[in-house]
Length: 346
Ligand code: FA5
Image 1 (cartoon, rainbow, N blue to C red):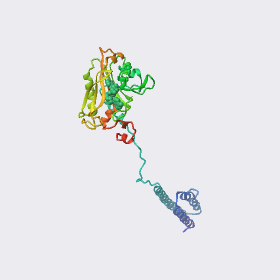
Image 2 (image 1 turned 90 degrees about the vertical axis):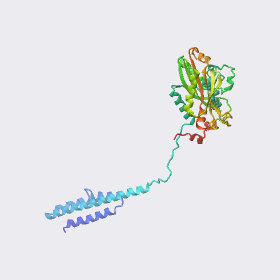
Image 3 (image 1 turned 120 degrees about the horizontal axis):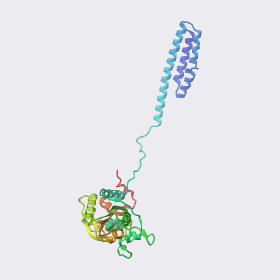
Image 4 (image 1 turned 60 degrees about the horizontal axis):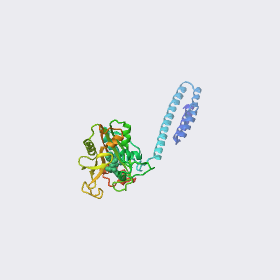
């Protein structure tokens, strides 16, 4: 064997040993730089070829090529081995324990009060009503005078409120929103609902709260009659409570409507038998209504000989109570998450 080939084999064995011993990417890279690059000892061996002649030149050239190939293959195998080992180690280290509970997020929901408001608005807008809103803080003029309740009228006693000044108060009903809407309509026909909050100095009990919601309704046009009012309320009540619930119309009195009615629904606790919740009557009152009083029409710029109208004021929590079987109105205002969560839409 010629001398240069012996040297080549010695060098090859040394390089292969170094590759074999490399345990990480950094060491392997330094082997590559030292022994496999253009300036490496292996490439340097090529210069020996010039000292050879004829057959030896060819033999050495072939040996050089096969040596390079063998070293490169070994290097590639080692590189793959180190890379796979590194990935395996990383996977071991970063292992995720999927049996641990993850981060859970609490879902919010729409308060049952607003769920029922949305539903009621849907029913009325499907009948062609427009939604208007009035202010929570009202003047005495709009809350009472424009509703045909002058100073010292006994009906004021039934709706005592929280006064802010001598002439401004938290509205006792949504009816003053009627007057604002009529002023805006400027004598034109109207078909509106006004949802909102009301406040009264009522003693709180299972069906009364000092703060509660109402949806006011008002229709004004030529030839509007009590039959239209009854049909509208019956359709609304059927859509909200289904066909089976008992509905009762009673004649009543409101200074701003004539004639006036109140509407009751059979109690969700006793289904009409009488229980402490419905105070033994078997029914729960949910709304007041009637034909708009001629004085109210006149004060709002309508000629009562030409125009007539009906109006209604529905208690929002009462509807929610009868729909969801809630036995105490105060639950809507106590902020108890256990109560609210029962109405979260899944
Ligand atoms: C009124 O407030 C009239 N403005 C309704 C009206 C409008 C009549 C238009 C005619 C024309 P009343 O005081 O009855 O009426 O209240 C109407 C509804 O509001 C009641 O049927 C009840 O459902 C609800 N409501 C009244 N007071 C309370 C209260 N303290 N707590 C909870 N709901 C109440």
